[in-house]
Length: 638
Image (cartoon, rainbow, N blue to C red; front, side, top):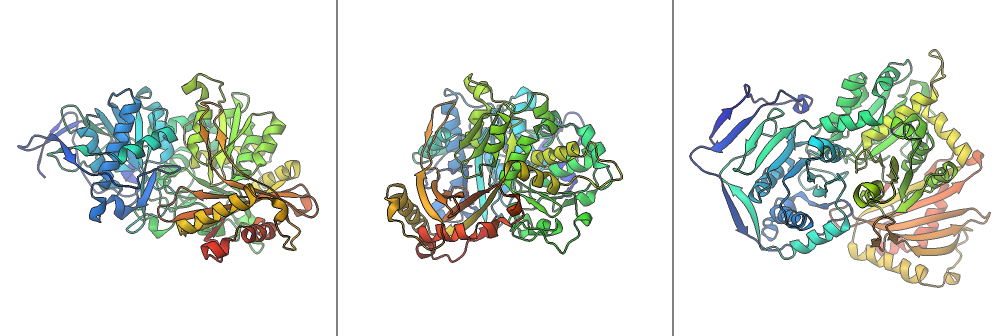
């Protein structure tokens, strides 16, 4: 394509960017592009509905070839979804077209091509301003921050191209989610309406007559697609960095980072969080480049699975002196290990936290942040959190702390959108203000009300702040109080909630649903006195299906997990939760969550998978997991 280019304010140059400088803001430029000799034209293209566009807990995820419409049966798949999304957004905006939308992705395969198509559709529909981060890559937390803060909250929504922690590349996953005007993931009312719209769509609007936008153009470059619509390349870091600086004392953290004995190892898993880790940890806090691993985004995530758990972040886990079950590797000298280890997922919203020879489960991490809120300025300047919440499958470690601290605590279905209502109770609904707010999920998600998404880097800075506070009185020549010290003291005070999760991935959907129906029929609705003893001494004492009535807007959500409650021969209680995950792109993922509370400090050092093995065996036998799924072992244990 040939273009005539009018440069308004500066010399515009193009070059091939490296992974590190692709995100470096440049001086502001303004350009106007039009195809030489050809006027851009808005057109309406006939199409047909395609089934299966029902978003899950966080957007719609499919194999990338579905989005690319490799098969003619999926022709216009991306276009249909985006048009349906826009139509839904317009309907919720009293019939008025949205004026400003952010489009960004986690950098996975097909990210750049999809952005080009989406921009044409937005222009064809008359969206006035489209913001794209330099390079097209932006973490999900940063998108939420930009929606809330950019130009006083001008953006009315964000289209986020991500399949989160799922693999990327040819044959792997691609996804799209939508964040609404307060930066929060679209609720079920929106996603249900989008799905219904996708089943009746007859056409989509787009623009013809121009080529691709240069996503690597300098920050401030503006492309005028039509008389009404333009695209602006924005700094991906600006608003996110502003909100992090509001949450934490960057000056104090920078000084603590220089302290002898302190070091950090951050694994970006080749996802969108890597450049943000470099911007914050290296450029702002002054940590050495050796603090980072795999922080250059790649379309296939370096052929790794970008899920920050004990299995897929195994390189980091090993470097932190841990075995792959999370237990300490006793052959490693803990004094030679990094003080803090962390990993983020593909779009930068999840986190794994570890200390030297100490894995911190996500549920424990949430409870410890709650109990140490004085260390985090976002909470301390307000006198502590005004509300906390966890997803129902997460352990009750948070509940124990919240009760002791007299903080309102909520248990919600899985999905960050359920936390959004609580965070925005006053902002959106004029009801009780629960901010500052802390929340998290067992699936390696932690965050607060600074944005409306979980935030991996926020969790890392929270743990740096906790370490800094714990070592206020530690002499510079003395060893630091470690994460392991902090965790073990916490268990001694509150007891330990042994916890782990078994994932059975890509199970036949029919078999998975059959197993869930068995649990409902035999245990939730059945007579538990008929349940046979297997000799383990672990007795099934109750069964229920979790449903949720939102305390803010009154909406009801059903079938959010099946809970089996058990009692050991010594009277100890435990529970196992079964649910089907909505984050996969093919088949079904069965998640089995195991939890047992232990007050006796003599048992606190046991590895969770070992402590919970007999409970897992009991539950697997009851629900006929092996017989119905033909799976002998879980895909992943975390």
